[in-house]
Image 1 (cartoon, rainbow, N blue to C red):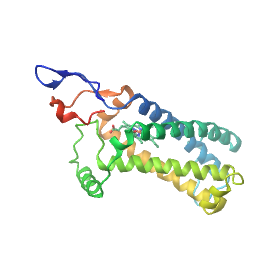
Image 2: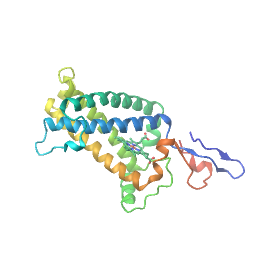
Image 3: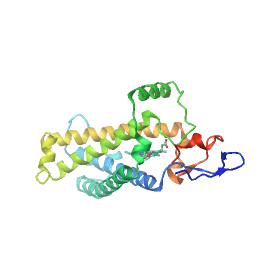
Image 4: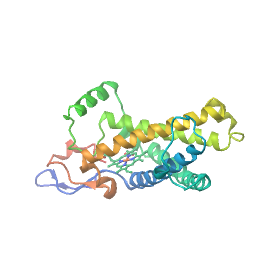
Length: 226
Ligand code: HEM
C-alpha cells in the first residue's frame, strides 16, 4: 500500500509513495552484505583448488587471508544468506510481493524494454514499478542464488546431500554449477550497480522505503504503488 495521502481539494498525492516494504529492504541489504562475503571468500577457496586451471582470483580481492580463514567466512555468511533468502522467498510468495512486482514477464515486453533501455528511451519516472527487463533480472538472480546455494550444499556435504550432488552430475559437476552460479550473480551485480548509478533516484527508496511522487498524478493513475 502507498504511504502517501490524497489531497482532497486537488485530487493529487501530496505526501510520499511507499516504494519498498521494510521486509524487502532488510532482506536486500542483508543479502548484499552476505553475497559480497560469500563471493570474496569463495574466490579464495576456489584459488586453493581451481575448477578451471586458467582462472584464478587475485588474493587482493579475496577475503579470509588463507584457505581455512576463507572457509570460516564462507560458512558463517552461508547461514546468513540461506536464512535471509528463505524468509524473503516465504514473504515474497505469501504477501503477494513477487506476484505484484515481478510478474508477469512477457517476452514481448522484455524485448521492447531492452530496446528502449539500450537507446536510452526507457522511462524511469515511476520508481514504484519494475520494467520487464528488471523483473527478468531479479527473478533470474534469485534463481541463480537458489541454484548456487543448492550446489554449495552438495559440495559441502556430498554424502549427506548425495541426491543433490547426483542432480548436479556428482561432486565435480556441483563445483562447476557453483562456479557458474557465482559468475551469474557477479554479472548481475555489475549491471545492477551500473543501472543504480545511471538512475540514482532508485537508490534512496531502497534505504528509506519511500519516494516523492513523480509529478502530481491523480491517485487512480498510481494504483500500482506499493
Ligand atoms: C551492493 C550494492 C547494491 C545496491 C546499491 C543495490 C541497489 C538496489 C536498488 C536501488 C534496488 C531498487 C531498484 C528499483 O527500485 O528500481 C534494488 C533492488 C533489488 N536488488 Fe539490489 N543492490 C545491491 C546489491 C544487490 C545484490 C548483491 C543482489 C543479489 C545478488 C541484489 C538484488 C536485488 C533484487 C532481487 C532487487 C529487487 C528486490 C524486490 O523488489 O524484492 N542487489 N537494489
